Structure formats: C-alpha cells, structure tokens
Length: 143
Image (cartoon, rainbow, N blue to C red):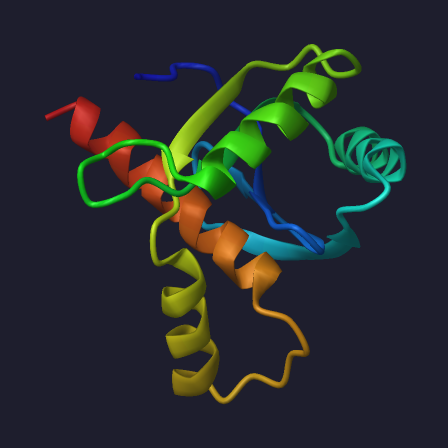
C-alpha cells in the first residue's frame, strides 16, 4: 500500500445524499476540506469530481472511504460506494484506493464540536478523517 509518488491526494466520503471532498499533499500529509457536492444525480457528481481534480494541481490518486463491519466485511453502504466508484472509473483514470471509513462521521462530529466549527454538514471533515487514515497507513508502511 506504499505510495512513493509526490502530489495531492483527493479523498471522497461518499454518502447517499452528499459527497465530502478533502485534499492533502503526500509530503505535508495535512488533509483539508474542499467542500461538499450532491451525490445525485451521479452524472453531475462525477462532473463535479472531475472539475475538482482539474482545479487542484497534481492530483495523483483518489482515496475513497468505505465502511466495513466489525468483521472487516463490506456493509450495504460499501456496496453502494463500490457501484458509484465503478461509474467514476469510466471517467477518471487516476488510481483509486479504498480506506476503511468506519466511524469517520462520528470522528468528524467530535472534531467539529471540539473546535467549535460552524458547518452545516460534516462530510468534508469526514473526508479529511479518511485521508488522514490513508496517510497514517502510508506512514506505518515505512516502519
């Protein structure tokens, strides 16, 4: 799972209604939220993701949060995410990595409360949590 390339990683927290987007550079490893886009219709969501990739410089891969159950197996939501990503892959040729996003929304809510942030949705913060997990996995791969 090691990634030796240098550039930006885009993270997506895909939900039924919204997709949270975050970005972070492989050197700084500091995710920051980019925003939230509607998940439906899928064609519009993919256009928005493609635009985000184009607007950001040097995006080298995409990290997708996928929830797993306590046994490490895919949940029903994970299967929906997989179907969305299958459609996304038809339009975007960047490498895609899945990261367990279990409890990322809970972690995002706690972060928002702790830092007294005023945000309508936690989705982009949850995407930051997913990206941080990816960076942590990369760091642990070097140990």
